[in-house]
View 1 (cartoon, one colour):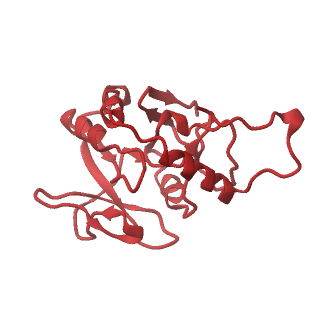
View 2 (view 1 turned 180 degrees about the vertical axis):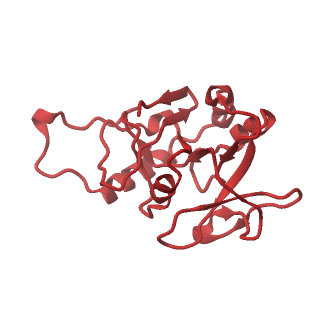
Length: 196
């Protein structure tokens, strides 16, 4: 199901704020989890065309985020090296670390599972990006902290793939000058590329 917004000829005098869009998107996403999602999305791992040895930055799903765990396992079987993000400061880009054998992610900032600071640093070739909603131009609605926008700006050569339920699509999203577009969205129905 898509959220339809008014056409250009019928735009109301005030559109919802980004905070209101976030509240709506959070409520909708909470109803989208279903058995089989992770398996269906992982089946599309080959569409990402990962080169052996490439570093893919994943994430540990928090609350009702679309869970990339099975996708990351499939990419690792294809030869990718998997890294995870760590928040280092409020207004900084994320850092990425490989997980040493035998180690597990630990609960960190905002209750999100993260790598430890002394684990090996990595610079991703591809980032899997969580989101609240996305539109047809490849823009995402994030959580408001700006971590991924700063990270994508700092890694201009990395490919950014949003990970979402297909029904997280919205016809319209508010955006600011600092919002950074994605290269593609991967859902349980497949990969959608956004020309850049």
